[in-house]
Length: 602
Image (spheres, rainbow, N blue to C red):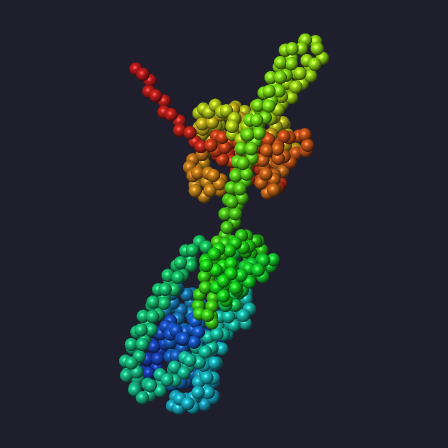
């Protein structure tokens, strides 16, 4: 709607429409309408051919509008006043019967007004330069050129100005990139009109109409084929999930599909004619532009052969994000261009990082398990020797106390190896079926004593608590370790929530867990309102002996044990946290099928 446009664009369009209406109303009474037959023929021809274009061999993408040729012919034959009707008919049909999509009324009126003013101005120039309906073809060369150039400038510049006001761009840049190169087309169109008129004068209107029928039909067939091709291309561009951007040889954007709008935060109209450099951060811009230009001019470089180039892109809001670029060359050598296919790989990078973390923890777990196993053997030997020493010493011997200290040290070492074995998933388990909510609710009193009065505890269980198959003692250990971690993150007090529910993970959610599978899971969530964690801390969170606590206040094994138990139970764990916004640990355990009770024997 007109009211949706920026104020300056709205008033400009209203002014153009008013000028067109005033020009038409004041000058139409001066027109000569007789003979009426040829004028009606020109009006119908202009209306029916408004969307037809003939491809020109002068450059890639150059074409000549058939209705423009009709407008010029009308100006030569009938003068500027009567030709306003032909121009208005052409402008009306371009945005109505020949339009691929519906247009608002103001756009139709604007288009008609531009053509009325254009026809009047170019016709006046033609007459003032000595042109007329019966002038020799050679003699009208100068008037014809003047009329064509006037038509070109008066027709294109107001449109460029309207686009500039609508999209807040430079009118000169829009005109230069979108319209300037079409000047030769207008000159050729004017020449074609003069040739058609010369043939008409010799053969007569009706014979000319018959002779023009075949070319017009072929033009119509080509037009329909072009419309269908453009419709298919438009459907592909609209449906594509990847951004598709077409660039000319100056790297100015010629096409910007909906996926590109969503990815970069710009509108299509706002990007047409602008440099692709706008989508690249300043730090990497020179290197990436060099690679694109090298491929465009030589066909070689890092983008050759359909290779994918990973680079950093820039959104409209200034945020940078990783993308994967593949390009294809198009056009002729003289007017080469590129089509770029751009994929946002932010999620892919995140998944790769999660996979690396998972693989690193897996490797650390294997190492820790091997070390713990060997260390256990050493501790067993030391414990055996200490027991023999205690048995050989008299009860009151001073060395008995030292032997007991050796045993206590061995016990502490054994506790450490048990924690390492829990992380490496080599600990013996006793799996059974149990309701996850029952186990968590049973820990209420213990958890309240553990976290203290400064922290408020809330345990939430769903109506039908999910059943899992795991070691209930280990699950209790998981809850305890997470509660301790949450308590330490809330030194000034806060709120700890332990929630149990059932969730369904779709493919996308499962993929986010790196090793997850889609399906239904029991979810155990431990949520605190503590200090939260930054990305660097989250990256090392489950590594053994990693801790952010002061020396002597933590072993750095609590969360490692949680990770090991969850993995050993066939589950997955995810962490959501930001500095100052608390943390949420989500543990997903596979739902277990509850066996149906057997019927009582009679």
